[in-house]
Amino acid sequence: MPSEPAEAAPGGGPPSGTTETALPEHGRTAGDLLTELARLRDADLPVRGGHVTAYVYDTGREAVHDLAATAYREMLEVNCLDPTAFPSIVALERRVVSAVADRLGGGTGIFTSGGTESIMLAVKGARDARPVAGRPRIVLPATAHPAFHKAAHYLGLAVDPVPVDGGFRADPAAVAAAITPDTVLVVASAPSYPQGVMDPVEEIAAIAASAGVLCHVDACVGGWVLPWLRDLGRPVPPFDLSVPGVTSISCDLHKYGYAPKGASVVLFADESVRRAAYFASAEWPGYTVINAGVQSSKSAGPLGAAWATLNAVGARGYRDLAATAMGTAERFIAGVAAIPGLRVLGEPAVPLVAVASDDPALDVFTVADEARARGWFFQPQLAYQGIPPNLHFTLTGVSDVDALLSALADAAEAARAVGPPDVPADLLDALAGLDLDALDDAGFTGLLAAVGVDLDGGGPEMAVVNTVLNGLPPATREALLVRFLSALYAG
Ligand SMILES: *Cc1c(COP(=O)(O)O)cnc(C)c1O
Image 1: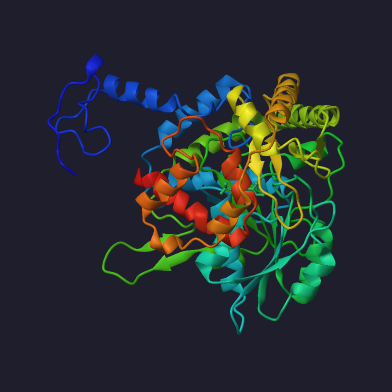
Image 2: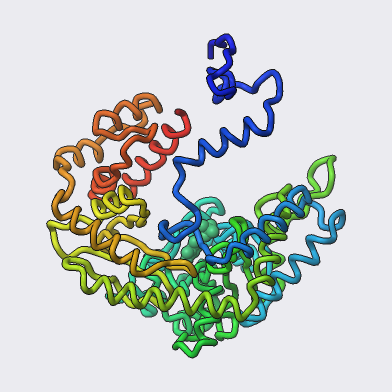
């Protein structure tokens, strides 16, 4: 990278040519840096306010989020690497884990950085607690979160996929048929993310138990909303560690716990399975390494913030937030039925709603683009195993259902006027047959530009990209997504 002479940028900003490529020789002022941060964040989706119906969870209670930030900062530089050096992390983790266990059927647990890490540990615990003769295997319904595929990939397990029924629920008979002598774990979701529907946890756990196999319930998204909905008198089928045969469960506090990102809990019925999730190494001449989770050095900020959030909101607060979010979801579902061409997929048990189109002239990916142009983010989900493409809505404590419905209705009307994106059929064939290994990041960026995708932003017209991906098999989607991410960071 040739070095350019540093010039003062207009407005006292950083010297041009150095902002992205090199560290400044002299440290920049706080004011200057925070201004740049704010400017960079201008392009981000808003994290508060309910116009982004995925990724972010807003209580609508400013003081709760402010307190979490303060607690986060208080614990920011404490290192979870050594719990004997910083006993506060043991005390906080015990409090957070037991508060979750108290609502999810007991057990013994680990505080982790998120659902993916909780799932990774559940899979590792299962693999190492009950070693099998062959390659360990995991039985996975089609709607299970990709974190299980990731865990299988990282930990060397094979996946045995099983289909879901017309209501997007895992099929227990198929689960039973998929179990082999090398199966170490069976998975059920409470609920699965895409349509928010509950798998038949009791049936699947009983099947696993009778086969002598461990059973993990993925309650990452549902675990901190279902108990409150049950308290409110809503019908919630048993799903937690109190169900016979359920041996572990994951619950993300950075979703319906409304804690800042980096907060989840995995609970184990049996402490020996929890220990099988741990990792220790004395194979070097440095400090002793004993980690419950995937990371070694890690900030205690998320732990402090999660503890503060849980206790500031309290059981009553979570009940109120769950009532609001679920009430919003129900009004949203009723409202969607009144929008021509749109329909809700399945019967969600939590405030997650998937909306598909029945009308070929109304393309959901175009609806998402039209909504984005109106200041809303609706999350596209690609077609998979007979489930049509759809938009996902995560409703929270702050969702304004009337505004949301009118945004959806307006976006749908505009999308109908625009029509579905025009993707030449031979483009899909060309992509499916493309030799990606022959392209470097620059070559791939050039290819994207040729089909109108600009990695530097500009009009976020994603309908074409989504339609292309939607038309390709999962393995090709995955290969293209890897190249997309690589090109994005290559810049
Ligand atoms: C969000 C989610 C996960 C993964 O959680 P991360 O915190 O994003 O790692 C796993 N399972 C379900 C059902 C989820 O909704």
